[in-house]
Figure 1 (cartoon, helix red, strand yellow):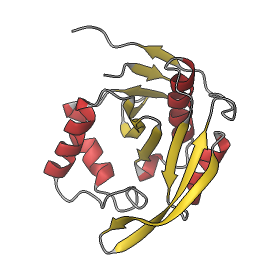
Figure 2 (tube, helix red, strand yellow):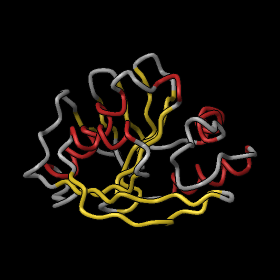
Figure 3 (cartoon, helix red, strand yellow):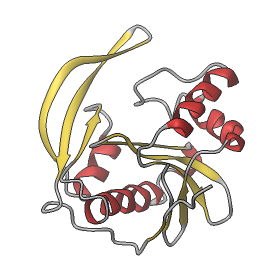
Figure 4 (cartoon, helix red, strand yellow):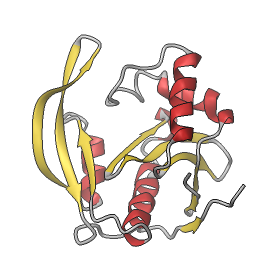
Length: 181
């Protein structure tokens, strides 16, 4: 179970059952899910299943919460070394993704000893690609028709970042390890 990462404007913490409504709002949004690997969630039960899976993982996978206490997304290594993230549309364009993703990667490199981070991005998702490139990711490959979303195929760009290419977190962060139960 991951601990808690605190940045200047965010708290990245483990998923909780109480996150269901907020995450359903994000995961049912066609805008937020436009470049996700699944279609938008249609039911609360679908999001509950997703959230339970996130809560059961031992990987560094976090719910993104603003200092005001609002759940605005998810970021983390759902399977080492692949990072993923999603934000509520109202939280996009404010630098939250950069702040959260850079802190998670910085911690993975410095504290966990991960030697690379990878990402799979739809080539038409220019915002995500620009974010990753600012964080030191480079394109290492591509593939056609990697995800079937409904009746539409999506392609993939594969990106990779190493401790040598990563510029480091621009925002200070701190880590609080999980406490034994």
